[in-house]
Image 1: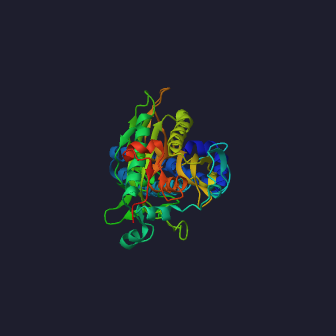
Image 2: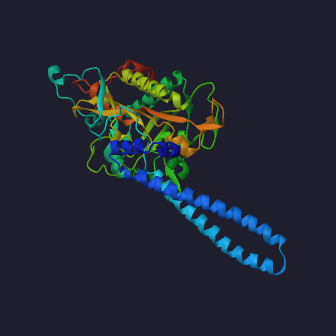
Image 3: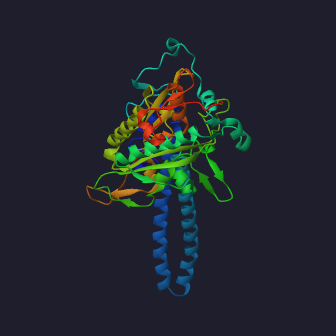
Length: 427
């Protein structure tokens, strides 16, 4: 959540951020109103409690009729203390509930608007001209079925819509992609992690995934556990309720895990193939750093993601995501989108978000203030190095040949036994 002290000091900044996101700025005033009621009731409670204690001492010293008279006042004071405490607690609950409805304060320069209001920062590479090459490109599902690599029909039979099997070279491609992402992350100094994929509510809420998009999350009611849609959740909660030592620099982690998303609200979108699915594997980068280092870390994660995108040898672009499409915890987000020939558009493959102190404040992750005077909240950042399904789509479609074979980028070959070309199996 955002810093309440900063909200009190500059509420208009939070209102402007809400407007940029397309959210209700009035929630800022709800927070301030409840906060004022809480502080007033708390002050009254503390004064009444002090009076109650002083009154108790007088009762202890008194005798006879004087004591009886004082005892009558004790009951009235106790009732007033109880009422003021209830009022303070009610206002506090209202304040915190409203505060959780406010997304992170967007960074200056973030585009205003929704999903289609992004700004293209750079385009890398050029899409192939298949017409000039003399053939019509197959889409990833047709290629996947030709290579016996993707089976959505049996996935649906076993698990329902938006599930799939990766078989043979399809499974090998997933393993190769994750191995590439892990190798790059390790070379860049990220600590490898195998995280839990079931987490408690505190972790899911702390990472910011139970606010506006709670309907995207799978919840196991019998165990009161949540299936994570990204390793970001478990990584964010890794150091919850801890004081970190960042004197030697940021803590950087990289986790590969299976991820689960309900894809609520996506009915009719990307129903063909494996672009939008309920289960996938992902390698996620995560950083804990000092707040003043967050923007540099954000640029570093984007650089690493670009290194992975370049290794795939596909055309891509980098976009600055608009405020209304950020998600609650992010103050700024960059996406790397690969060109998908048969869709004739760019689609997201990786992303990186600067969450400033939003998640860490919820999860109570702090550091010793380098300037002294106690502790302060750290910053967190995340970045998707690679997912399993979408890069497979980009690879198959961009590197296909007229005979159905697929060129393998040089960076992936060591993880595929040196294979340079994937050929369809014999009939």
